[in-house]
Length: 346
Picture 1 (cartoon, rainbow, N blue to C red):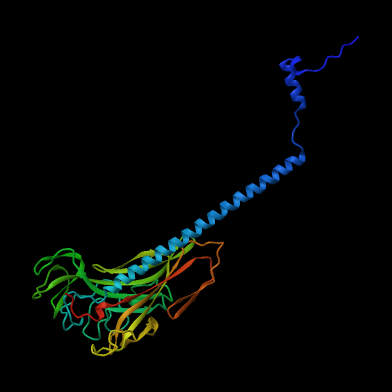
Picture 2 (picture 1 turned 135 degrees about the vertical axis):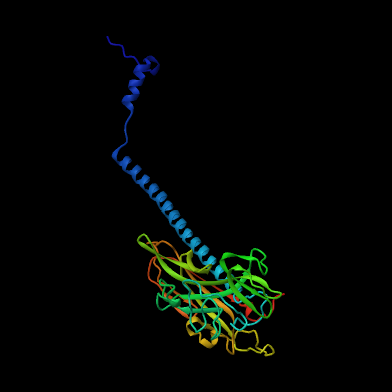
């Protein structure tokens, strides 16, 4: 006679309990695996989408940050130089060979702009131009001293003096590598390094001749536009100062009233783009250039293949249309030329 024993987990050994548990365990069904994979893919797609979006935002923000920095720097450099244009220290007359004599020989590689008297130093004929610009139509400009200028952009030329780092007096030795201007209120002389000439009650200033233009530079398989600056030391030399500056344009504020007692004296009558400036306007005959509008178009250094730029940018009276993958920002500023109407600095 068999006796049936009711199963009780307490009546079996630990080994037997383990074996029973193993027998009762079951794996995931095929449907459950597919559902889990689908949920995982959805979560992964969401995370990937967020990552890609953040990366795109960071790249876009970086490009615009770069544009802001380069564009504002270019505006600052041009504005500061224009503000000091035509400053001649104590001297109050016009820069002519009759009053500024003698002058040194032209430096090596001299850049001569438009007009009959637009070199580094004044000549005997024509009005000496301390401010001049032109719209580039040929890569070779300024009597051929520049051969890589970007077409449709402007070239700007500025002449002036600044204070010297050290006090130089007549008979002292002026450091090499610069040109200097020794003058009083009525006359003066320009000289290179060496013994400082004697001008009664005169002071010494450092003479500066700056040139700005835009050129394209090859960087690998890409092309990067840069703002170039030419500086007069022992000769005229050029160097890139700001990357990503694609175009620079100017408009010149003209005051047609030369009589200080006239009601409209000191007020801009019209802004004239560089290409429309005449010889009479550059030479301040029956008018004065008293302000300048600056337009700077900054372009990103690298392409963004996810971005298409088909915008038209208005640089004063000039419209510039593009069709590529570069981001751009347009900057503008107006500079008042205080030296155009000041006869004496106190």
